[in-house]
Length: 113
Image (tube, rainbow, N blue to C red; front, side, top):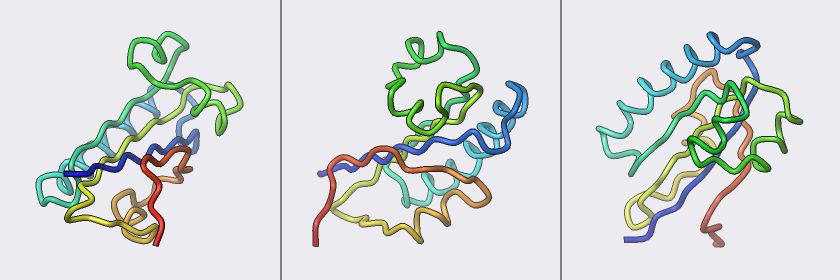
């Protein structure tokens, strides 16, 4: 089974830690539905509200700061797809994360057609 990980980051809609935490909870509920239906092989959502969260959650700080320019709070989302049965395009991924203005910062492995 081949897996693909896609990581997304945003600061949109999370100017204070409380709103970032609320947004992560909402995204988590949405993604849980997609996970249970088989659209996702896994997911992780994290509200990064302080510098210690990078180490505590084992999140690559450089990836996040490529979008946030070092400002916190921020939202981190990691989506995992099973490539044997899922080859999501950008439209499908957007449908998994409605209303979230997330920027894709990492994809592994990258697929070529």
